[in-house]
Amino acid sequence: MNLQLEKLMKIYNGNTVLDDISIEVKDFQVLALIGASGSGKSTLLRLIAGLEEYQGGNILVNDSAVDEDNIDDYRKKVGFVFQDHNLFNHLSVIENILLVLEKVHKKKREDVLPMVQELLRQFDLAEHQMKLPHQLSGGQSQRVSIVRALAIQPELILLDEPTSSLDPILTYEVLTAVKKLADQKKDFIIVTHEIGFAKNIADYIIFMQDGKIIEHGTNNILQYPKTKELRSFLSKVLTFQDEDIKAG
Amino acid sequence: MKKTSSFIAALALYFAVFYYVAVTAIGKPLDFSVYFEYSKVIWDGWIQTIAISVMSVLFALVVGLILYLMNESKYSVLKYLAEIHKTIIFGTPLLVIAIVSYYYVGFAFGIDSKFWIGVITLSLYIGAYIADIYKGAIESIHHNQWQAAKMFGFNRYQTYRYIIFPQVVMSILPPLAGQFALTIKGSALLSYMATSEFLNSVNTVMAVSFAYPEGFVILAVGYLIITIPIIRLIRHLEDRLNYKV
Image 1 (cartoon, rainbow over the protein chains, first blue to last red):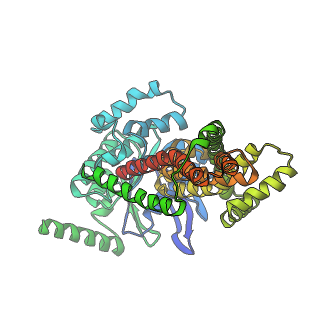
Image 2: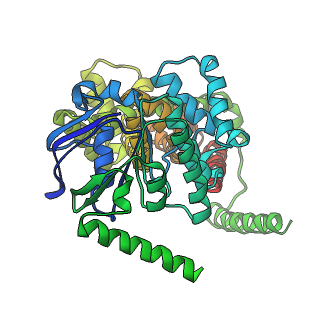
Image 3: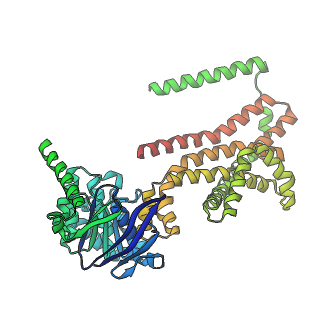
C-alpha cells in the first residue's frame, strides 16, 4: 500500500489543524499515526478517509487521488473503524454488517452470509450476532466495528483510536483483534496511543505534533528517536505507563 | 391493588365535583331521551370527527415531511416558504384559520366539500407542528450515525431510509399520538364552518331540544371515548421508549 500526501492543509474555524503536510510512504502494510491529543493525527486519518474536506494539497492512496470526483468509489474500497465504534443503533450485530454489503455493495444476502458468519466466528462474536449494539460491551462493539470494516473486503482499513474509550481488559481484547488484521496481511492505518502495540505491529510510524509531521520512519524510530519532540513524547508516555504499573 | 383503589377514589372525587355542579346549576335530573331519537345523527357526526381526524393526521404526516425537507433544503426560497407557513400557523388560532379557509381559501380554489376543506385546513395546521417533531427527532440522532453512513458509502436517500428513519420512528410515535389527540379536539372548531362533525351534530340536537346539559355530557363522553385510548397509547409508548433508553 502507498500513501502520498502533498502540501496538505486543513483549516477549521480559522485554526490550522494540519499545516502543509507532505510525505510519501511506499509499500507499507501497517502504518501507525502517533502523537499527543490535538496533534492532528485523527484529522489526518479522517482526511485520508474522505470524511472531511481540506483546504489545500493532495492525498493519493495507491497513486489515486482522494477527491470529490472518485469519493463514492473510494469509500467502497476503504473500511473505517471509529473511535466510538459508530454501529447503527437499531440493527443487530449481523444486520449492521449485512446492511452495508446489501445496500451499498449490492451483494445478495445469501451470497455474503457465510463469509460474514465466518468473520464473526473468527472475532469471537458468533454468539452475539443477534444482539443490538447497546447489549454489547465496549470491546465487543469495537470488534463488530472491525468486522464491519473487514466484511466489505477493503483495500485499506483505517482505525481511529479504536481503544481510546476502553478499559485495559477491553483494550487488550480489541488490540488482539487488530493484531489479527495484521496477521491476515490486511493493509491498515491506525491512530493509536498504544505505543508498545504500534511498535509491535506497525512497519511504518508517523509522529505528529501541532498539525505537523515531526518524525517518521520504520518502527525503529520508537527505539531510537531522532527529534527531541518524539523523545519527549515517548518519555512522557513511558513514564506514565511505568507509574501505572507501579500504582497497580 | 392499592393503585386501583386510589384510582377509583380519585375518579369518584372528580365526579363528585361534577355532580355537585350539575345538581346546583341544573337543578333537575338529566334526560337523554331526545338524544336517543337523534342517535343516528350524533353517531354519524362522531364517525365524521374520527374520519376527519384520521385523514388530517395522515395528510399532516406528509405535509410535515414536506415542510421538514423544505427546511433542510439548500434552496433558501423553500426554506423561507416553510418558515413563513410555520410562523403563521404557530401564531394564529385554529379557529381563525378554519374560518378563513372555509369562507375564502376553499372558495378561491373552488373546493365545495366542507369535509375536504376541514381535512386540508387541519392537515396544514397540524403538519407545521409535525414538521418540528420530525426535526427534533432527526436532530436527536447522534452525528456518529450520519458519519458511519457517509463513510460506508450510503447516499442521502439510503441514509434516511435505512439508518435515520428507522431510529426516529419509535421516538416520534408519542408526540404524533399527542398530535392526533389535538387534531380530534381541533376538529371541533370545524363546526364553525358547519361541517357535520360531532360537535355540530350535537349542537343541532341541542338547538331543537334545548337539552343543553345532556348535550355537553354526550360531547364530553364522545370525545373522551376517542382520546382516552390515545392518551393511554402515548403513555405506553413513552414507557417503552424510556425503558429502551
